[in-house]
Amino acid sequence: MEMRSPLARVRGLGAAHEGAHHWWGQRLTGIALVPLCLWFIWAVSGLLGADLATFKAWLATGQNAVLMILLIVSGVHHAQLGLQVVIEDYVHCKTAKTVGIVLIKLGAVFVGVINVFAVLKLTFGS
Amino acid sequence: MARRERPLSPHLQVYRLPITAILSITHRITGVALSGGILILTFWLTSATYSADCFAWAQAVMGSWIGQVVLWGVLFSLYYHLGNGIRHMVWDSGAGFDLPTVHRSDYMVIAFPVIATAATLGCVYFVIGG
Image (cartoon, rainbow over all chains, first blue to last red; front, side, top):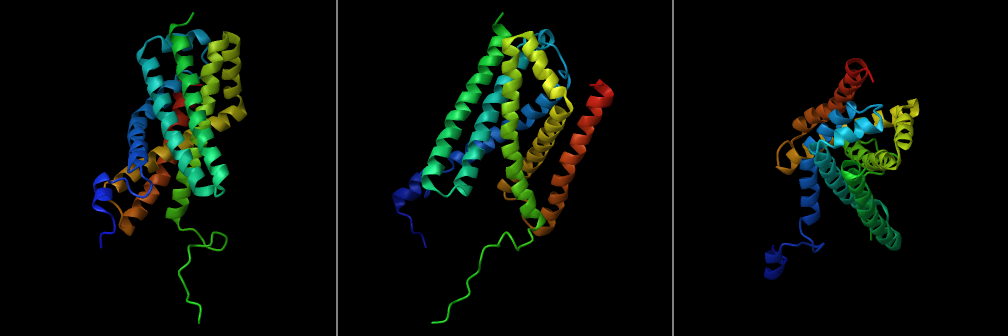
């Protein structure tokens, strides 16, 4: 028996009022991260023990800087979505849960910006 | 009134988890570990923005034996999360849910990170000579 109102059915947002948004974001970044992570493993294998000049020359090719930024943005977003679910599942105190999720969201933006800024500085800076 | 026996969710201290449950929680644990991996990446990239000496120090920290153990752990987590993540995508499509198929993919999901980590280890130490 259909318990939802016709309006709720059309909106399709479910009990959490956000529909499949979180789920979809997790899949999309997951798909992006498959090739990006494999590229990253291959890339850092060649940078083991490298000095700063070598590292900067590697980033300066542009394509490596772009792939690094893509990896950082999709990685941080994917991590933030996953950690949110971990907190939602295991932290039962409402206050701690809310504070935890806020810290995860803000921390993710902070870490993402630091890393993107570092890549840009290394690529374009002196 | 007699108390009705209701089905209970598995009591984690007395219930031996099936392999699928262990692999499921491992997906979460490796995911959290990889979030830590992002912090290591942050440490590596930001050190390079300070000075050549600072970057050399960061490279030495990660090249130390404890640094290498941590990085190989992160790499294993990455391969596991990647393999099992692909399995989740297959499940999302609605395929592979019957028990024999799940048990087969269980073993693939265990074997992949072991083989891939060993192969990467071999490449790094014997081919590149790091």
